[in-house]
Length: 277
Image 1 (cartoon, helix red, strand yellow):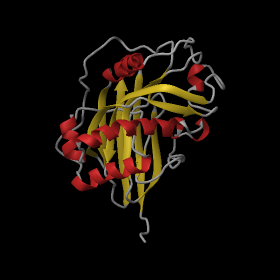
Image 2 (cartoon, rainbow, N blue to C red; image 1 turned 120 degrees about the vertical axis):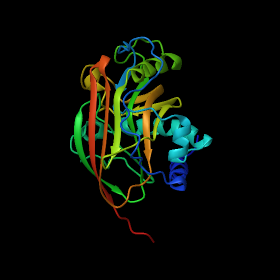
Image 3 (tube, helix red, strand yellow; image 1 turned 90 degrees about the horizontal axis):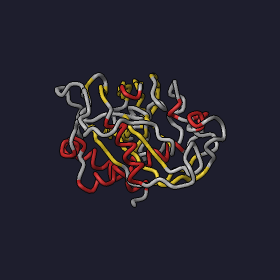
């Protein structure tokens, strides 16, 4: 696996090499057309998260489209499945009190960030929010429009002592994403088409004691601080090249009607100039 810094620089280089621009002619993405599987249900084992739009949610662009518009190559396609894992490791390592997934204003958007890729987030379990966030010049933006993580939690949150296989975990995540609809992403009111369906590598997550799953699983302490593995993610993601210095509006929307899930997020982004040596 690449180091985080090496991976970020490689992905950013791919974006800048092709310098894709936001298209104005493709319109809003209306629906994902995945193969439909069994109806999604929250499992009695493990934990499922749907954080749309940086939950997150969106698709329609194929691998070839992403390669053309975002400067991806066969190797960077592989890198993206690592980046989605790192996105979750970032999001889930942050205590609930300052977690960007629970942020209603954008006050916590800088927590745990580092260049050259800046992570953005949806709202945990779906909601609407408008956030203001300052981002350093030169940082690419990476976020899920909709995604779903599942990980093995023996004797925690309703799971018995037996471990859950990667195959079964992936099936639950895929089922949620299969029901995604009414997806859209825009920057400065112009539709974004560089959306990518990504299945993550197998990874682990380190949860603090004050983690976002406690509320779903029964209250404080019900999901103890620990390293949980295996974990997998399935989702629709966007990797945007660095925006110009100044203010920009980023909006994304996603739904899963069968799960009563709706997310609508607006970021008011201020790209701050940085001094060069």
